[in-house]
Length: 492
Image (cartoon, rainbow, N blue to C red; front, top):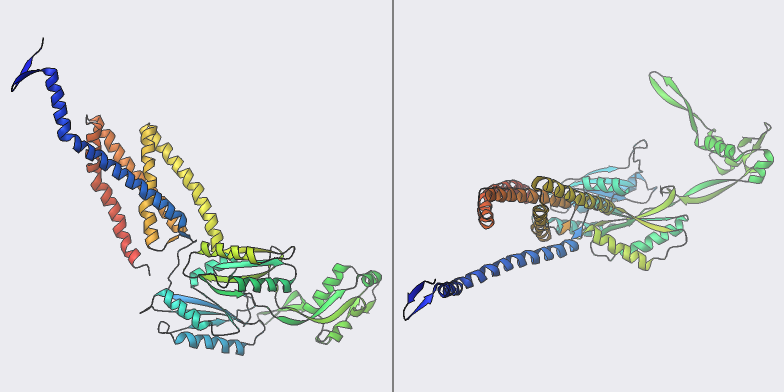
């Protein structure tokens, strides 16, 4: 049986009528469906493109351990030649102070010259620390520091390192040097080590962003060397260790007890009298005990000569070292270190058993970045397991995690447009961002599932669920963002 519809001149079967209705709907709404698919492709394509661009930018960002502080105060470390008098040291530091006080940003200066012998970091009067509060008016901090370094470069005979109180001490704790980068030359001959250190200083001087380059100060001082003659020691029956102990106690002294007088204590030191150690001839004629109780002059069992030697010998892991220190300004720390390592490897030929090591904040940045990478991977895995336990659906759990890379886009562009430095605090911020993105995904998917259980279609569930959760998610995000805006704007 067939039913017919009258359409003008002829009748059509119901099947033919249905076919024409489909053609009419496709003709009218087909373009709308094509436009919808087109916008879906545009959105997905744009998101994918932005993600790829963000990842490329992220791997090209500069890297540093901590962002540069602005503490409102500078700490200058000044080191002149060891052995210099207090008066001469004070005269040189007064020249530095006069140069800085002529700058409009600086009004007051305080200085500490030398440190007490019992101080944890005892230093002679050749070393000073200068605290310089400053207030920026018309110039930026970069312009101010550039001008300051240019002025201080005119003062000769003294190494000056410009830092800040906190960053200064962080650098000192990390590398033992009050600078961002410490290039350590290890070897046996101090003269060769200083030659290599000065060659490195000359070669890296043209690297962009590298400032305050200096080699550890060293001077030759007069010394008396007492070298044992083993054949004579054997003849007189004096063991080498007893000879070394005798020389140490006789001429350097050893505390053996304390004497108390009127509620005050004084060290009781065993040492030769001054007339036996105030000249090279007196030292040669000093008497030492033999195995049979006799006494012989020290010159009989040792060569005693007058010579010169370094005022200090720095060591690390029992090995001698000379340090080239430098700061970084206007560039990322990791990029500068890579340039330094490249130039040193290309231009410096080290003698056998001599080598170079690098220290500073970048070492901590490498270790912290590696640790955060491993812990982040572990955290993502744990998040996936928790999502699977909640939804019992691998596909839904994967969709929520798929949102995490997209959360990178805004953060990467923010860093790129601001400092351009990827530091450890920034990485921790990304981890926090991943947590927020995961929470938002859980809220949305939970709402979608709840609506589908109520009878909504998947399409309607997504539309209605997104509208329902838009306000709570935006309010939570804006609360955190608006609260941090004053801190971001007043960061200087």
